Length: 124
Image (tube, rainbow, N blue to C red; front, side, top):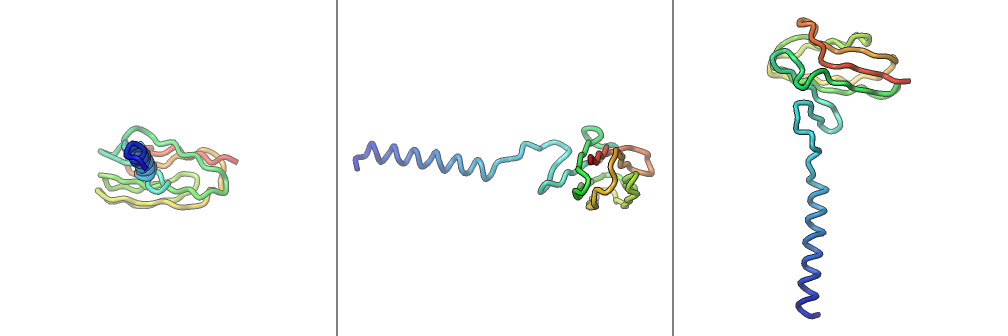
């Protein structure tokens, strides 16, 4: 095999390796305050407000509703309609995981502050 062909093959191999690495190590582009970790949306609360505004989450009835909240303030997070509540400490996080059994629109809020952080929709 002559050296020109060997260099061409080496170049093609390098490009293929670079493409594979880009696909495998690709950043999902979600570098903002509303992160997604392993498919679970994360809402970040700073100064008692959701960074980036109220997060809209949509599920189908029968799905598992999953999300995480990270907060710099202590409060209770209340998912209205489903009546699911969890306390969160300042600097902490809390995860929610419950079945989507009720259709409609619901809000989740920092209960003590009356600050909505999520608009939750469950479709039929």
